[in-house]
Each structure stands twice: as C-alpha cells, then as structure tokens.
Image (cartoon, rainbow, N blue to C red; front, side, top):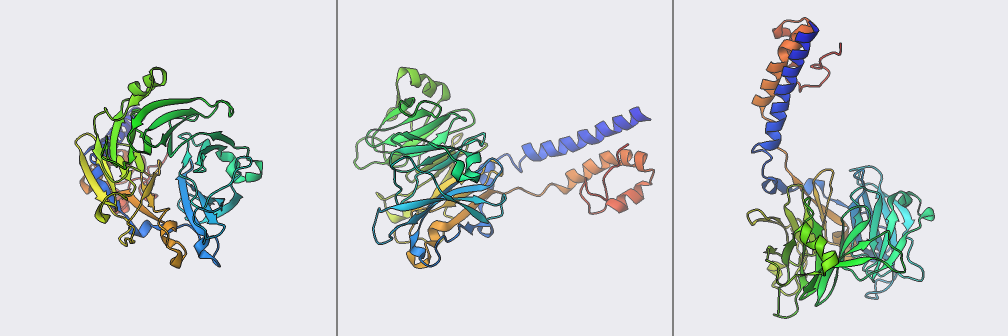
Length: 413
C-alpha cells in the first residue's frame, strides 16, 4: 500500500514538475525582452523631506537591500538659490519590502573634513550578497558601509576611498568595478578591503574618447561600458556600448587595460548612463543626451545582445523642456526595473519628478488551464487513495481551487 502510494506520489509530482517546467521554459517565458511593460499603477514617490521648503529636495539615489527593501540617499539642498552648493545626505530605508513607506535613519556619515553637494551621489550600490553598500559622494570619494550599520548610523564606521569615478558595479563582496575619467575614460576594479592610504585599483578598460558611462557585469562575468559623452567627432560617439569578455578583462588586471576604441561595437543608445544586465543577459540602457535633438533625449531601452533586438520605453509621458534623464536600478528578487529622474528639477511641485519612481515589470502570463487540469488528473488517484472519496466528490470539493489550497491539500500520512 505504501509502495503504491509512493508510486502515485511520484507520478503526481512528475506531472506537476512537467507542467511547471513547460511554463518556465516554453513560449510564455522564453522571451523576457518581450514581456517587459511599464506598470503605472506601481509607480510611487519618495517622501518630501521638507514640506515647508519643497525646493530643498534634491536627488534621491537608491538600490535594494538583500531582503528587497529600498535603501536611498536623499539630498537636502542647504540653499536652493545657490547652484552646486552644499547639501545634506539623509538615509531612507523602506519599512518592509514593497511597503513604499520610508524611515529616515539620519545623516549619512561622511569622510573626515569632507562636505556634500546639492547634486547628491552619482550612485548607491548594494553588494551581491547584501553585506556592503557603496556610496559615491560625487566628489572623488567612495564610501563602503556594512549594511547592518544602516539600522543605526551612530555605530557606522564607513571606509572612504579616494578614487576618481562616475559609476560603479559590484563584482562580489570585496571588488567594485568603477568607471572614471574623461577623454580618456576607463574602467577599473577597486579592492574594498585594501588599505585606504594605498587602495588597490586595477584599470581593465581604457582609452574611451569621451566621458565615462556606467559599468555593468552579466551572469557570465562579461563587462559592459560605454562612451557617456563625446564632445567632438574623433573616436566613439555618445551612447556607444561595448562588451569585454570575462577572461579578457581579468587578464587586463595584469597585462594592462583593454582599448575601448578598438573593441567591436555592441550597440548605441542614449548616453549609457545606466547599464544593467537582467537574468537572461538583456542589457538595460538609459541616460540622457545633451548633444542630440530632444527626441533622442527621452527614453530607456532594453537590448538583447544575442540578436540586436531593442525595445524602447518612456515611463514618464510628461517630458520637461530639457528632456528626460533616466537612471535605472534592478530589483534582483523580483526582476523589476525601477526608473527615476534624479536630475530633473521641478521646484514648483516640490521636485515631484525627481521623487517619482516608475516600474518596468516582466509580465508573467497566467498558467494554462489545460496544464493545471493535467496535473490535477495525475494527482486524482492518489487523492482517492488517501481520502477514500469518489472522484466526483473530490472534483466538486476542488472545483475552482488551485492545488495546495486548504480545500485540495492532500493530508500527511
């Protein structure tokens, strides 16, 4: 009896596994690029930090902690009437994943004798394991925090490295890829465990004939970077993106940086101010253009390197006179892309544009009714054996239910 029951259980599990595998590998999910869509109902705003003086609200730059909560650095402008003046960085942490309610943890501890500017950080990045947070002060310093310290900043002991940079992406818990420079620009790897007085920084890509763009790595360790702004017609152009194989850039740490200009072109879009790789190797590209017509300044694209397919998105359908400058972050847990415009000032409405976050989500189709029915039929003999009921009664009791609910759950023996 027990052997027959186990055999039935194996058959039921096999049928269910087949259905799940078909859903995950079949047409419904084979093409992640085609399933992305803007979800206006999921957009939200970061809180207004000084309601009495909304013009003080500066950029809010963010990422996701390991548990899915948002962590953000919001900047309060000391004097909105003074461009590129002083500011105060405040740490905001979401109270629960997806709550969109934020708790202020106080002022971010800065490097000794260092200040903060009203334009805020150029990036905030949580390490893949969730243990570290890298914060750019946008003035040549990179702060490395233990994420546990963010709960009580009075105990924080950040390590602030002096290193030229524009953007950053973690390789692992101890290594941070940084793009840097202007004509030439490049990419290097910072060891965040190396001494502050003598940091280990290995250039791996160089010779970019323009400004630094973002830097990203995919699941295979391939490195992506671009030309963020080309002010003349010599060399690569704004928004051109190139890919460097993992083995090549690793070897460059010893042999010297790879030449960006001579590498094959992968694609070109916007300013490549954001580069992100999703779970299928598609590349999210965003930014803004000041050297092109306004029509070229708006948007975000997702590019598939395998065949060159590209889909454009414009989450903010109200374009300001200066166009859109999108910055994107990917939630590793949900696969969603969160997009904001941290440099799009709107002082008349409390800088609502720079506080707003748009969501681009991969659409998940409903499971096939036929597949669910097949799984149910495979499990029906086992249900009869354990519950001792006729098929008609089992069917009636489970009609309209999903396997695993109280009405259809098979008891333990």
